[in-house]
Length: 327
Image 1 (tube, helix red, strand yellow):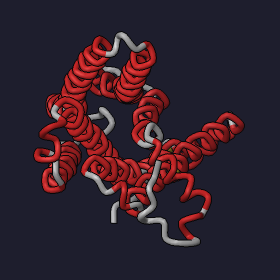
Image 2 (cartoon, helix red, strand yellow):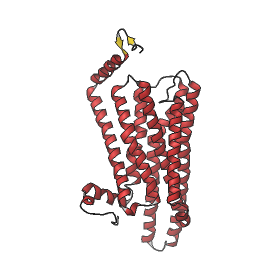
Image 3 (cartoon, one colour):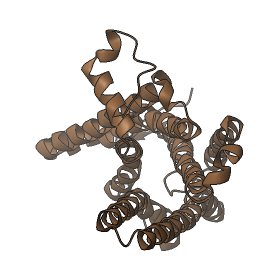
Image 4 (cartoon, helix red, strand yellow):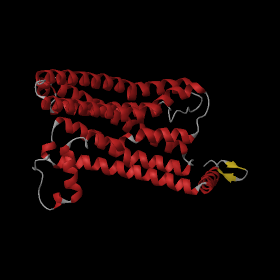
């Protein structure tokens, strides 16, 4: 066995421990507040996605192709809350690890794979919403359970290929091992393209198309009902609600993910080290999208809110409500 690396008689493990203790003691109150906040984000993420998963599985009314995609998204976000958040939390607490390479590779693999799965599931949901809103007459024939299964399998398969491929190439948080700058740049660029930029372009095009079609349909209905002010007001309200939902979906997604992926693209070109605090802040901002997804994709719909109320109140434990009509 090779001797442990030392620094003036102090092992690397001891040095790491003392540095972490010193960093914590210097601003213990700030650290406690940060850890409480990060822990709360983790708990809300797990709880919110568990509600979505249980609701879709339990209530038969929610057994639809669209909700199966939301179920897949909730599973990815739940795993981020269960696996990625705790590993990131521990990394933030300790700042350095004795077995840093192994820890960072495990953390990076889960981070990249599950984040990519979440983004690709969001992309699949946008495709489903396009067919439901713009091709409603052929929706049931085009989007069935078999197609949904294929979409889910492709999303998770691509996510694992991207995650394992990036870790195999030695990419971790924008840093390069053994001076492999070109390999890091290529792997980072490919990761950003397939994990973020392509899905974002697809979602932006789809949601723009949905918005334009919905606006055109609403204007057509409004013109036909122009003699009735009440009908025109109702259509205008429907149009505003559709616009609000689409703007919220894309706005929150881009707000959470864009800063992190911009950093991944430009950081290797700067040839300078980025402070860990900045990297971790961007990483947590991106991962927080997994906490917000249940609110965006579930709380907008009244039947999910009804399901959540029944679960939280404990009504489903008193008798069988699986066939209950949700409103």
